Amino acid sequence: MVRIRLKRVGGKKHPFYRVVVADQRAARDGAFIEQIGTYDPFPDPPEIKIDEEKVNKWIKDGAQPSESVVSLLQTVGILPKVVTSSG
Image (tube, rainbow, N blue to C red; front, side, top):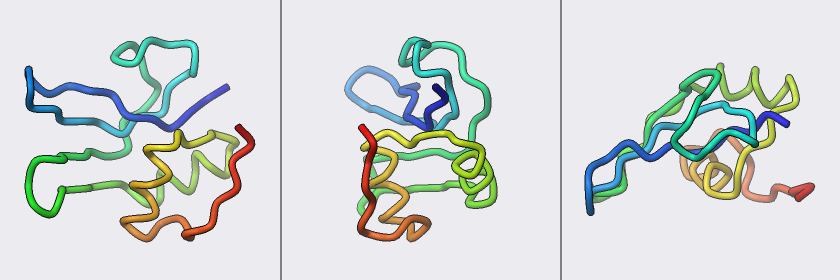
């Protein structure tokens, strides 16, 4: 199954994440299909940059976002606040 999830790339005690489309069997920081955004939790407010067109394309093609990505997409306003997950 293809998932939209976070890939950690930041340094020690300073996380920085890329929002990527990857096979769910791949390691957290392993191979991915496409990068569709970034998330930096350190600034106040956190900096979230996501390509809405790519997210919609991948979700339409059947990719499932992880729980953390769902919350980021809701914060940005790409997904509605009520989302049912199939788990």
